[in-house]
Length: 299
Image (cartoon, rainbow, N blue to C red; front, side, top):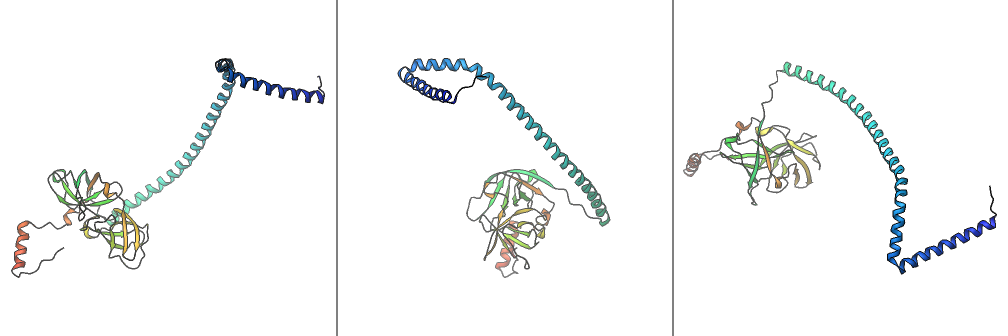
């Protein structure tokens, strides 16, 4: 093998650098002087080098594809292991659930527990609202002909909206939980404190007549208590949003300002509501009060 002296190697390096600088300067000058010719030369070099670049890029592309497949295999393997572990845990929970279901059925039979009544519902679309400052209600396009009855719970997919207050043959009016006339017995989840959710035409109804012995905190979940017989226990209502000296206020789960579709659920409790007085009965009561009769109790 031919050895090059250090002096000659240094001279070649200096000459190479100088030659490259000169060629670069010449190319820059040629490109400025005749751009059309230089562009043609550049395109020709690019066309000549394209096959070689394509051949050189194919192994890199194949390597990238193989690496992607390998990563996919590793991901599939990990997912398979994770799913096998989850399946094993779910099988364990399935056995627990089956055992608890059998125990529950046996205890129900021993206690002779009365089963819950069948639940039916009607889905209706909101076609109007009060739009006033002193009422919060919604009109839906389902009525008595569709199985809607007064007192049924109006719900969305996330929580309670209100109850059916008035029913026509083809439409019904829903009294929202934010209405001034709305009073819903509720319970604070966790502490089990009972209270009354009272609407005042604002976006957040307030909690009144709260049981003593506990503290209501922001974030506590509120659900119906079942007292009063209007709603069954456990219907989600909202969460406590603010707590101040005036009491606690609840942010409803449902967006009451953007109600489109409502589910009118019949829990079999509508019969517990008192029937409204007829017009003639109301007139008779007013006449009796006017002549000094016994006063009527307003509920």
